[in-house]
Length: 397
Ligand SMILES: [Zn+2]
Ligand SMILES: [Zn+2]
Image (cartoon, rainbow, N blue to C red):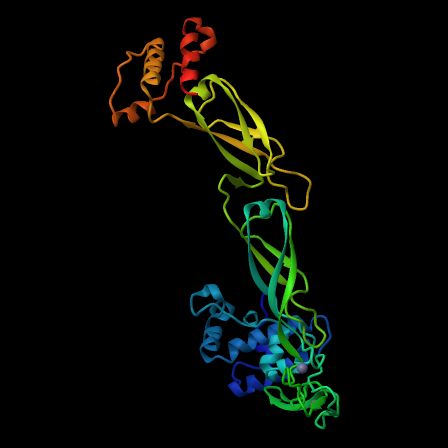
């Protein structure tokens, strides 16, 4: 739909002065302001009026509009910075405020939600996995206990406000762009309370609120991770004028574990396995975070970095019966020092693999240790070597 002519929208002509345009805008805006005009198309009409006025009240924009029409004043024309008419306002409430003055006072006695609070707690790894009850000392704003939030010293009299006669609100007449307006605001004498305190509470000086440090219990569910937050509804600052209290957010930090790592809901355990155990197979007792051990079979010919899973011994999912797994990662250890007997046995083994059996003195020995042993015959299939493997196994304990 093509845009209506801005002059037509305001009901003015091209020759009209700035003052004429201003007057016309005031008249139209009054007529179509959505707070006053309940007609369904008043809102879009008001938008159009506002947009037209943004352009025609600005001499530079008006000149561009006269020469180029809408293209001269709309964002992509390249003539001016992007047009920011109606959208520059936050909505009708804001427009109302910016035309009629700050109205925030109107609502100073309205219910107000209390502030949210934040606290942090550091858990052991076990606590984060299995959950824990913690007690936090939280300082928050509460209703003053001395005056029960009334603000006056108990036993003293409170009088009705003369300015508002106890209503808490007064009418204020204000001049604005549109002329004179009556506005209802919170009574400035009593701040909207309707009453005057003659002897303020000695504890809160009349505020009705006080800061208190309180012990607050927090239940941390098992499976939580560092960086997560637990929300405790209603444990923040108390609300005002009957508004709800804020929330308490507990930020969780988790200490590292000496033995276990964590990936999502799995626990990670690095199992040291020496080369002989990896080659021949071995049974190992695996510690679990629950405090028990599980027997794990490391099969013959296990490779470095191999992974085994002990099902259901990981981290519980939050608020669920499911648990992750305990993942056992094989950390292959190559012996750094060998005694004479072990060396002799390994040389014998090397010969059986078809290697020439020469030893390289350290530190180059580490280089050769890194070399992958690709010919890895199964000892069962080489009965001639069985004696060597058994003897190696014995030699390495
Ligand atoms: Zn008052
Ligand atoms: Zn008090």
